[in-house]
Image (cartoon, rainbow, N blue to C red; front, side, top):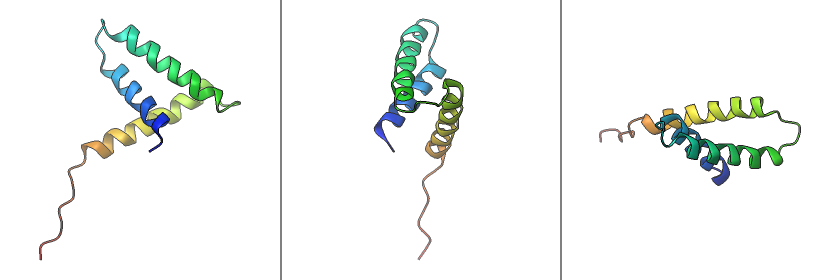
Length: 74
């Protein structure tokens, strides 16, 4: 996975799980990363970018929660 995308997903997850005291710091970090990413994709709205990021973050969470596959019995 692209390092920038992974950083955005991690920041998104941290923001989702942050408590009241941590929220401003995580929101600032997330907003900064989003703005940096949007500079590389002119013409893409923030809303559309965030929708795509949510889908990727959800897929990332789902992939992380799957149990490892077991090899077939010999």
